[in-house]
Image 1: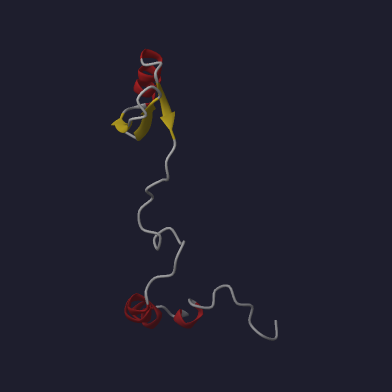
Image 2: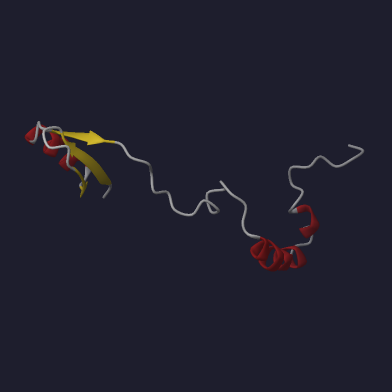
Length: 86
C-alpha cells in the first residue's frame, strides 16, 4: 500500500499514513480539515534508475567480467557511439 502525506489545515501538523486508494478517499471525506500534500518521491537507488553512472570500481570489476564473457563485450561501453566510416 502507498504512503500518503497529509496536513491538518487548522494545526499545520503534517503526517504520513499507509492507506489503499479507497481508504485514502474515505479518509479525506471523513476528515474535511485534512488535505493531502505531495512530497518528493523516495525512489531508491539512482544508479539502478539510470540517473547517475555506477562508481568506477563497479565499472572496472563487474563490467570487466561481463565484457570478457560477452563475445562483443567491447561494444558495451560504446553502445551510443556511431562508429567511424558508417
